Image (tube, rainbow, N blue to C red; front, side, top):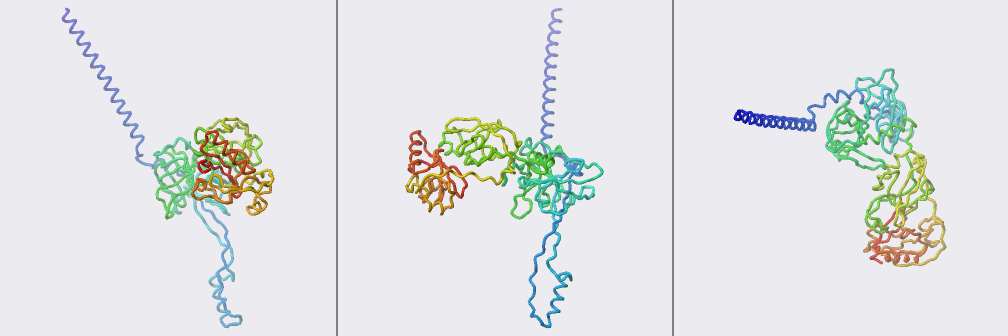
Length: 496
């Protein structure tokens, strides 16, 4: 009996082991299957055909027509009364179409791409595709053609919003979140390359957050083929959402070499919403001139790391009213960390006009929080900074920090076309072996501040140099103006 019981217990143990092994193997197989499916999902699509078929009806070709004046062709010279006069006039008229004139306006056409974003006919494209056009014709994938009118444009991001009128609802596509797109993700472009009609190309996201030339640039770089005529067309992710508007290519020959740029959808959406509501953009305006904080500038003002945006000038406007001063470093704007000037410009531009925001600045070795009510950038483009208060003339000259500087005289004021209230020290010469020359200072520059203190005399500059040395600084921060444009320069004290 005991032998049978022992046998039974051994059998149970073996069964449990077998069951455990089976469960473990089953789990392993399941995990292996899951990994295989996940890898397949990340791999190249078997085909883009289904996606292309889905989004094609919302992509359009755009043809624009513009009236341009003809250039007057050189006329032949025939002596008056010559027997060839009538013959030559007849020859010219025949070559000009018999109208007797060569200055009639002619029609010029251009091609581009776009995409429909609503069933009632709103179309997005590039501003440069339709700029200056007298007529805009939209051609749909099915062959239908409709005229379009311009709702609004934004040259800063090269985006335009058009509208067509139709009795039936149109196929449209939606914007996706460009911020979640990763380098290496598959993308597909569609448009009208080189006027060849509807065409699809595929590739990957090659890079993110590219800046070309604009203040609000946020381009997705892709190797999907983009050529002339693709401008204004959509860049899709694999869900069929628009994550970019194809805008530019980098090419030595005008054709695609695999470096194309699409304005990120998260920029485009904000622009399109404003164009739809107002017919124009309305960007926030802080009212400061700024420059990046370099390592030597950070050391000169006692900042732990090179970050933020250094204020070089504060014209009349929101920041001046809030108490922001030249020399402040903007560290945070509306709760967002400011890493550099580009991040600040984009964040401010995307903030609602009239909003009261908290701005944290670094000033005199500590942070300070100020409240600024934003203005509108478009209304402030021509704002001119107020001039500095006048100071008494004290003609003097000295060699300091590799610079030969002098106090302002009437003669220098006239020679350099300085404002009547301008104050500071004029750079007369720069030692080409000095750090000042390396930092770009040149004769004719006006130094208005040192150590974030205004300068009225050479004595003021010497006091700031001594104060910087006593504080253990290796460099002194100068505010330099050239042709009215300000910038900060951290100058090594080793040259003094």
